[in-house]
View (cartoon, helix red, strand yellow):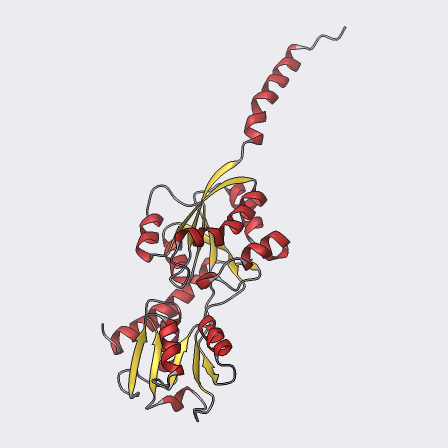
Length: 292
């Protein structure tokens, strides 16, 4: 009759003790900054991002607790909180701030952020410099698009406080679109989403005159405090989301500021630091030429 040795007893006991550790899923907090152009209803907003959270949870074999915010101040407070996110989804500026708070972007939407100068199709303007003397509407300085619009004007050697009949800073891009449609403005600088909506409502009546510089958009960042193995595993999950049917469907479910991505690509801190530098320069021009 077989009698297990003392070594066998020890090995089996050790293995049994390890089983719960091997099968226990990690608990991670997933922070989402949805952006100001997303839905105000928090329950609807959660439903939009739930497929993504579920996908990431399944692929990483973890328990993911999702927390959503649309407030820059609230997100900044959460980034500085001792109870940190393991994974953070956020736009350009928030991602940059997160880098300074100990996060590293590892994946990004395959949808850069930029602005479009839009005019009526029958207007004679041929380039940005030709807008001198026009009535202009710009996206807010607190968005990504607004500072990029100002950067484009600066490169064309135009100043908001000198070279236009009037300049209006629009907190809401749909208001800028309405003003252009009513011919109260000659040109507006808005997001591609706003342009897409306008073109669908009035096909052929308006056209894109020019676009701004492009910066990397929403990024998925990891807390630097995670272990090297955790970072490696999560990075694998966060890149190439669109290559999986469930991941592609999760991206498609998102509307508003974070919408439009069909894939996630590798990202790094340097590109977000450079993007933020450009945005800060544009915002400085905004503040100098259009003081609040």
